[in-house]
Length: 282
Image 1 (cartoon, rainbow, N blue to C red):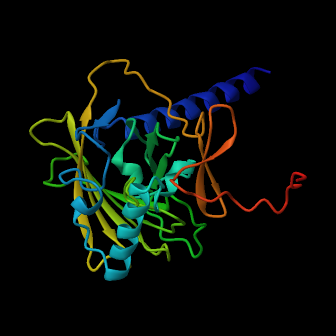
Image 2: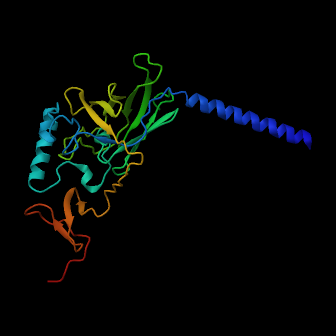
Image 3: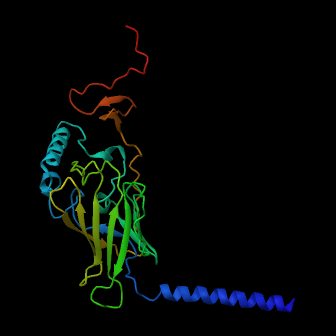
């Protein structure tokens, strides 16, 4: 009995030793401190390039075909429609639009994965930093499949840059609420460099480059987030589907009135096809 107790104590001590060593390996301050809440610093409508206005003002290097898509979207919105912005029915925005950071972001860093938690539609990301290669098959998703690598830029002894590449998308996706489009083939490749301001660590940058067949060249923009200094920041839940009056039928957007009835969203808009409903007797 004593031998069994002694063996049990040795096994427990060994387990604690392994756990302690693992904790020490993680607590060695090699990773940056990005804890807390991060909000975008730009004002106005969230957009891909915060330094420029949304829509045409972004001056996106679109191909003629996709410039025409944008123009059609803007014309439809001017008439009361939603254009090619897919998120009005609460579809996830996907990348790169996730990083517009609508309601606040939180970065959770672990040895193998960095999580970006987004309050907006709970549209979070998982970035693998365990050295894996691209899988043979990627299940397409709005956020895509992200592989990252930590870099100690400048030999500081501590990681200070997270480089990310994301592939494997599905759509539809747009850059902002004007319907600024990505290519319908969803073959986008998005590269990012996330790092803190060296002079003021309360600011975080996401240098993001989109490579997409709707563009004539790679398109780069820099997003800036500020750290909320409150020790217990307020996280505002953003559930787009709650009380959303928009509804899409056969690709056409309509509205639900306050009394729950279908109504047009645009002037002179025709009603949807009601062939599956019993028609009223005349």
